[in-house]
Length: 231
Image 1 (cartoon, rainbow, N blue to C red):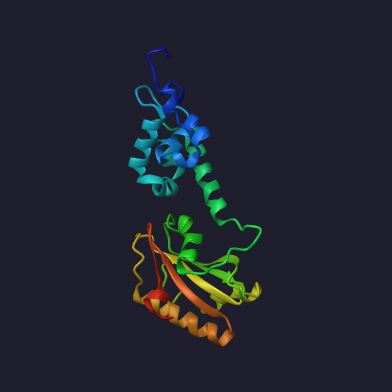
Image 2: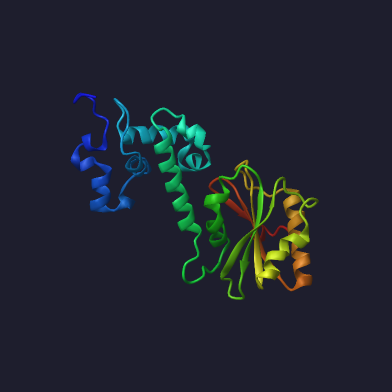
């Protein structure tokens, strides 16, 4: 292409280039579109990397949409292709791993918000319902997040014994139930409440305290303990 085509980050005014601003002012100073543009590096003829990033965020519904998007769908999007789609997916996965990776000192859960923050980034993007347990020490420190069940959640298919197997194996003192609503609405259903009550009662018999049940939606969550539902 000739000099008349201006679509690279390098062709943006120096004081507006995302990479330069990231270096000088830090990543937090950049908008989401600018951060995405750093990953994209180049745009298209008549559409620089920042403009392309803005279009992608609008088309997919922001970062959560890019997180949920199928790789083939992203790859086929005008202006992306395999390499850029892979770069975006890799960056999102690194962010997820950083968010969930155990620090040298175990994370301590002191509120429903702490528990939700631990799982919300990943679970809000899941297309099926997943039931997990956050296993805790006597000091409410996170031991592990265990996958219990995947599918439509009601009290019939979920075996109560399966809920407690990881907790017993890891010698946990307590646990927090977490599951997602793919619809994005975290409002508890009657089945959610019934399952919570059954698990809490079983936990009392086993000497394992069920501290809460967190339902994750799109950008928000509900604590059944706070709502006094089943706990």
